[in-house]
Structure formats: C-alpha cells, structure tokens
Amino acid sequence: MKVKFNRSALQEALNLVTSIIPSRTPKPILQCLRIATEQDAVRISATDLEAGITCLISQVDIGEAGDIIVPADKLSSIVRESFDEVIVLEATESAVHLIGSDSRFTIYSHDPQQYPAIPGFGGEADLEVRLSALQEGIEYTIFSAARESTRYALNGILWEVSGKKLSLVATDGRRLAKATVALEKTAKLPENRIIVPAKTMSLLDKIPAHDDGMVQVRFVNNQIVLACETVVISSNLVEGNFPKYDDIIPKDHDKKITLPRDTVLSAVRRAALLANEDSKGIKLALDKGTLVFTSRTPETGDAKIDMAIEYEAEPIEIGFNPQFLVDVLRVLKADDFELHLGQSDRPGLIKSGSNFLYIVMPVNL
Figure 1 (tube, rainbow, N blue to C red):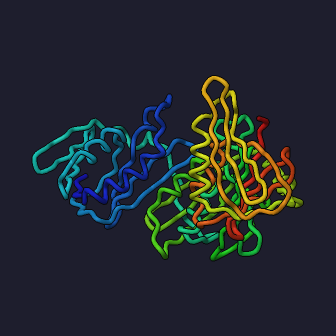
Figure 2 (cartoon, rainbow, N blue to C red):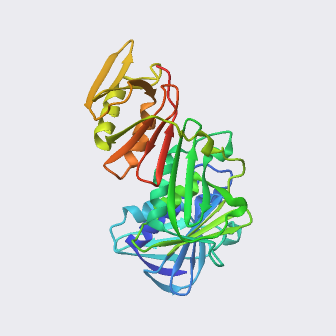
C-alpha cells in the first residue's frame, strides 16, 4: 500500500474515528484502525464490538492499493504533531511507514483478517433527518442519560416516531429531557420505539455539520446503521424497557414564569459556589416581583442572589441540584425559557419553544 494523504483531512477523520477506540480491552486489535483503499478514496474504520464507524477520505493520491491494521494512538499522535501538508503512508506485510518532509516513522501492523467486520449502510433508508437538526436534538438530551446504570435502558436515548416527528428522550431517573426533531423521510421504528446507546449518539454529534447534510437511517436486526456523507456509524441497540415518561410530565402546574437564560445560569452557578454534597442543592424562592437563589453550608457559609422578575402567583420555595439546572441552561439556544412549578415536592418543568422540555426532580434542603 502507498497513499499520499492531505494531513488536515486525515487528522479530521482520525479525530472522529478514534473517539470510539476503547482505552482498555482484552482484545488489543480493537485499539487499532483499519485503513483500506477503494477506487479513489481511503476508508478508515474502528469498532469496540458494540458500535463501529467508518470514514471515507477522498483527498488522497493512491499509488498502490492495500488493506492494513495499525495502532490508533500511535498513528493519531504522529499525524497530530506533524506540520506537513502531505503525509505519505507506505505499508509492507508487517509494518507501516509514515513519511513527512523531515521525518520517517515505522509502526508495526497487524493481520487485517483478524479485524472484526464492520457493517456498511447497504440498502434503502428507513428514516432521513437533517444532520444539524438531529445534532441539536442530541445536545438537548444526551446529558440526561444515565452514565452507569444497572437499568441498561437508561444508558441510551429513546427514539419514537410520530408522523414526521422524531422524539428523543433521555433520563437518569432524577431528570428527563425530551427534544422533537423534524424528519425528511419517515417509516415505522421496530416495535414503534428503539433505544440507541448514548455513545453512538455522541459519535453522531461529532460529525461536522453542513447546512444541507442529511443522515440516512436503517434498522437491521437489532442494529441501527446511520450514514452521513462520508461517515457510516453502526451500533447495537439497547435492550430493555424505557420508562413511560409521559406519565411523569407535569400537566397541572399552576405557576409559570418566563426567565432570561443567561441571567439564571449565572445566578445558579454563583449560588452553587457554597453548596456541597451535604447541603445537596440550592433553593429557589419565588415571590411577587422577585426570585431569590440561596445555598447554605454549615461549615462554610451561605450565598444569596436576588433577581427581579414578573411574577404575581403564590409564593413557593423549591430546592434543586444546581448541576441539573446548569446542564440544561448551557444547551438552550433561545434567550428565554419557561419555568413551570406546582408544589415544592413536585418536579420542575423547563420548556424552550415547542420542541424541548426538561423535567427535574426537587431535592429536600
């Protein structure tokens, strides 16, 4: 194999593909990349056996075709530190040589036949959605998915289709985020709903988005395969039952207020400076014309931030985990959002436009 790469195009592909590489694995070959030539391009692939990703690079000059397996971290480090516009890759049976204007690196390679197969797209799309819209939906929800839950369904993001709308829902049991995305092409989902691993969704979010970029989606057995321009991502679906989230969306809250996102985000962050694990959260106190954020830690002190608002309903005090508020306020795009409250022991509801809602459980202070 002999290929001349545009270094910046190669680095962009490596940044995306290597994000799936496991840091620890009993199978060292999973810490490698597969690099194979096609007619006028080079395909770079990686997998952790649960998900796979391939990226096609067309800014290449192929002198000799080939198929190689090379350690991901070594290749990425060399390309990242290079300042050449062009990097030449030459491969023999057991080694890969990377050649720059003043450098030559040799990395020992592996047998391509030992590398796991990664599915291609190979068929007609079941769904189509604009990449920028899907990525916005991912950013609105992924932070609410559980990190290490024994309820595996909570480690993913629920997909539900209704007409030409795709709903994305994530929860860790203490908060829930739901975003609605417009579809360009619709079909029924397997069993009307699927759960996609959060790791797979984060891979989608890393793809560079163009205004007209489209994501094509196929469902094959218990897998989802997504294609966007030069990138194909395949993944196992999460097995398990996702909670019936409609049952916990508050529908009878009688206190509603519109608040400026940046001002509230600043107030929450400042109030949280004197909160700790023991104090558990910050308190929001609404009264006529005012919203007060407070926190108190017996051994440290207390914080109080006042904010003038338009509010005429009954006074209420409610406690929240400040990080759960920061997480949602950071991703909102609009300047204002709606806060809906009922009683101090009921969940708070945040809405932004008609396509996003967020439920957060209160904490006792």
